Length: 200
Image 1: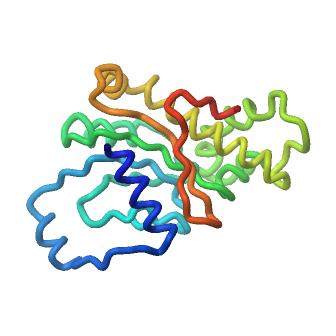
Image 2 (image 1 turned 90 degrees about the horizontal axis):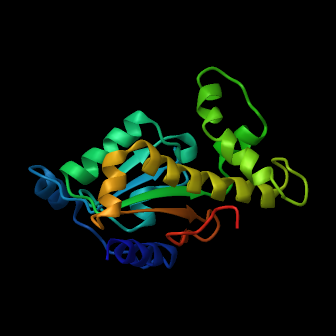
Image 3 (image 1 turned 45 degrees about the vertical axis):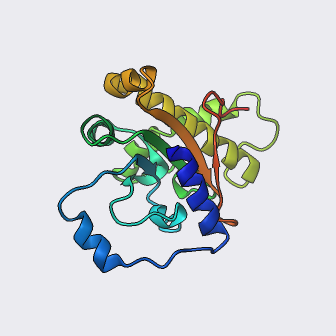
């Protein structure tokens, strides 16, 4: 149900069929509690306004943002809070096309703390390179897209591997952990199938 709500909201966003919201009233109503049904891990990219993309408002969704939508202990702790403590039913890893972090990882950029962050994406670059026909560089949009998809799926798996709490909740049918990708040109979000391999 939560996935369908997000899909419907994204359709409204992509079609510019948006509802005018009373944000002042929403601020007041949310001041004393929150009951979001999803936690979304998004890239830092300013061109992906997560609440807008899903046509959600104040108090509707938890959003964690980090370049390359990577998973670390702080993100996992935040997701566990969202689901185990606050009752969210969906964990969504949201990547996007033309991702600067993905491109930087492919280009093996090294700069300050960015170096360590990009190392989290490197396994996706390596996996995407296996069997790929064509130029394996950041100038090849097909390769960049494949790395992006692979990274999303890897992060979904990272959540399951490194959070026994969330894995158990998923196994018990209390939550779903899924991946999706935002299209910069259309505004549409494509949800991965629950068992989809990013390398396909």
